[in-house]
Image (cartoon, rainbow, N blue to C red; front, side, top):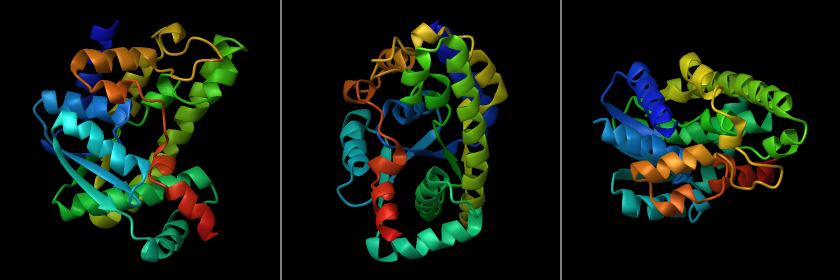
Length: 248
């Protein structure tokens, strides 16, 4: 099953990313590190892109993981003095009070800005893995209600993610950058849903989750500190969530 999963990920990447020079939104977590390793192995010219406030989790952890991964890596540290101006700009552009959407759009504003400064037009993300492989805590609550509840949560999260990434691309377009999510393609979603839930989450006490993804990451050479790390969402790892709440 891991081999088939790897093949499907590779196919989805090759079908959705024609350009060879790409950036990858990189936190050092298992999802972005797995995508980075696979893209590199496929022969793409990969540059890892990390954003966050100085000394934030993502900035420090991404550097630690890439010390082993050894790919080209650039970091943009967020300037707290201009952050509020960016927050206002994002809110005026996407026009939603959804906190998660605003946080992600702010994060990808900085990712796109970094990509543009490096002459990179395509940024690849691992979005879709948390939705399809039970990465969120919501799946722990859902599993006690059975597989149908898991699928209900999954479909809701996928729908939200696909819509949110359209807003993200609206923000990225300011820099002439396109954000690509190969694992949110309809073909990959269809395949991922056929993988047994037991390969993704064990029970309501499962704090790690995404087990088949973590096993695959180990197989392809992702550093152990990455594939054994518990999820930390982009907005928290970058400290954007904390800064955004302070700015209100």
